Length: 477
Image (tube, rainbow, N blue to C red; front, side):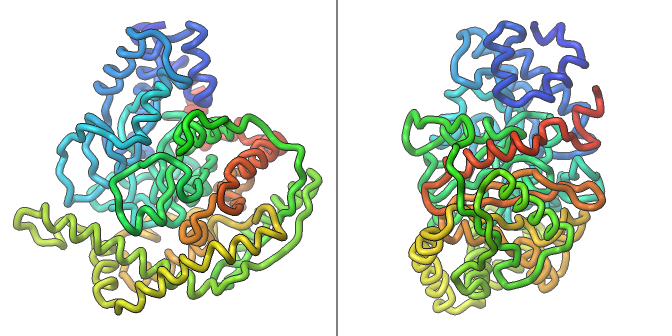
């Protein structure tokens, strides 16, 4: 089937399939790569006016990539499957703006090995997903736009920083989309949008971006997906070890699961979140896993304080790099108030604060290893409350308010970034008003396969494949 004959109904039916099933359509000869790209373009053109999940459209580039696959014949496991890189990911033929007014639209000539791996597997990029400026906020509302809306409720945030990616996957625009996670930025939007979001551990994937002292410690990358098998494939395809075997199903091993439902600073979650985690714990127990309550063996307040200091330094680094490109413009005309506020906060920190940051990071491996001697997996919330309304974490909210409210909302996720350990958000619950609430499972270093095997089991026990948001391909059925 070519792009010229693809009916609109078929384009939306394809959007209900995960990446594996879309790739199977190409292998069976039911459609070619050009047809898959055109189907994604149709879905984007229909749903994007509401969602605003893309920061950049690259339809002509996608058509060229798809045509090259068709001309060469089938190549790569996911040949022809459409996807979205995040706006911070260098991708040949597209600009890297990080949704900041300070960046120019210069096209990137070459990507890093992460992009090269995915291209070799046959994925076709149809554009870039939206994000907050430099990925520094937990909601996707950059001042330069677009303000991305949650497909479950257009009045609510899809989370951040990979909010555009999670919203696009949840709505069925593409089956997979890239996310990067420096403090929860894959898991937060996955929870808000009801998709699967794996944050790999440190040193598990090939290089994604240029070297940076803080980002290399904190940030991990993977693809948002609607199915566990797509997330498992993406992890294996981009792993530091070439030709790593993909986890393809659940394990018979019964796990010792520790439930930790209070935040790192000791706060209790919203009742809907508390009930969601209790329900997930009961599901795990019904499957034969040993479930018990526990607490993290660390000073959560000190850890989050160190994380906030390091986060401020990330903003200062981004601001310093942007100032060299301003061409006479004032920083406040090119950088958002939140970015400038964090950078100013970093400038006021003593050198000893940075020393404390690295002391926290240095002691975490021993602390986590000791904890996971008695437990295999931790179950906790992803966020302290259900998805917020748009505007709650906007970049022009006063700095002191955002410092308190946003870091309280992400009270669970930064630990894995500081420790370099893996975690996954699974779409197992909803709030009282129907918004997704993810359950986070975390494990020790190198235990991504354990988390994925458990995710397969939970996906089979409490399927989510047929749960679609109101603003999605399902509404065109």
